[in-house]
Length: 453
Image (cartoon, rainbow, N blue to C red; front, side, top):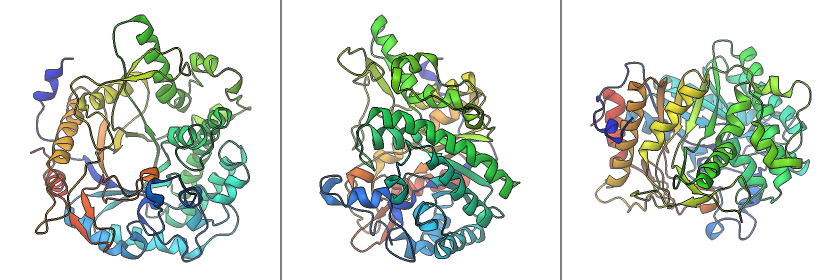
C-alpha cells in the first residue's frame, strides 16, 4: 500500500459510524474532597512537591462535578452522538473495597440519564488511572488482590448503571498504568521498580478479564471491551539491529498486551527479555485474561521510529526522528499513516472484532478566545488527516466502527498540569468558561453529516 492511498479516500463514513469525544474523571471532575469521595493515587501524587508541573492538581480541574449539565449541553451543541467518560473509583468505593458511596453512584446516574435524554450514547470506562490510595498502600497494581478489588468495583457500578449503559471499557491504557506509574515514576503512584511494573501489567490484565463476565452478568445487553494505547513501530533504517530493536519495542508496547488478550499468552521473546521479572501466571490466569470481548479500543497519538542502542534496556529501543513530521506541543510526531498501519495490522493479526479509535488528538498552545472564537487550525488539520487515515483503513477492510476525539475539554494533563491543551473546547481555568474551538465546530459538522470536509 502506498502513501498515495491517503489522498484518494471517499469522504463519507459508514452510516452507523459512532462519533464521540472522550474525557477522564480525574482530569475534569474536580470536587476531590466532596460528597464522600476517597483519595486516589493521583490526589496523593499531584500534591507531592515536584511531581507535576507548577504543582498543579486535579482538585478543581474543569469543575465538571458541578458543571456536568452544562457539559452535556455542550456535547449536544457539538452534535456528537457518543461520549466516553470514566468512573472515579474512589468516588464509588472510597476505601477501594467494601463501603459504597451512594453520593458517587448518584452523580454518575444523573450524568448518564442526562446524556441519554440528550440523545448521547454513554461509553463508560471503569478505570482511567485513579486507583484508590488505600489500595496502593496495600501494594497497588503489582499485587494480585487489586484485581479482585477491581472486579468488586466493576460489579457495584455495572449493577447500578448496567440497565442504561450499553458500552463498557474495563481499562484505559494499562501500559501507562504499569510502566509510567511503577517503572519510570512519571505518573502516579510514582514508583520506579521494573519488577513491580511488569507484575502490574499482569494484575491489570487479570482485572480486565475478571471484570468482563461481571459486567455481562449485570448488563446482559451490553458490549464490553478494553482500550490500549498502541504504538506502530518502525525501524529507523533497514539495518538488522534496527529491525530487531523495532520488534522488541513492538513487544514492549503492543504484543505484551495484545497477545494474552487474544489467547496467545505472553510473547516468548518478551518473556525471555524480562527474564526473572516476567510474571508467572497462576492456573487460570491466562484463560481469564483472554475473556471474549466485543470490541477493542485503540488510543493512537504518535508512532515510534526506533534504532538499536545496546546501552538501553534491551526491550526499549532508542527513539529516532520521524521523517518529515510536524510536531505537536508535546513534541509528538504527527503521523496519520501510523493510524492506518495500526488498524490494518490489528485486523490482520488479531481477532479483535470491531475496532474503535477511543482517543486521538493533539496538544497545541491555543490562544485564548477572541470574539467568542478559538482559531486552532493546526488541530483541525490534525483531525482531518487522521480521519482520512481512518477512512482509508475502513476501505482496506479494517472493522473500524467509531472514533472519539481527545478531548472534549482542555483539562488537567497529568504530570504536565494545565500546560497542555488537547480540547476541542477551550476552558478558561480561572472562570471555567467553555468556548468551542474552531476544531470542535469542524468536528461537529463531520459528526452530524458523517463526512469529511
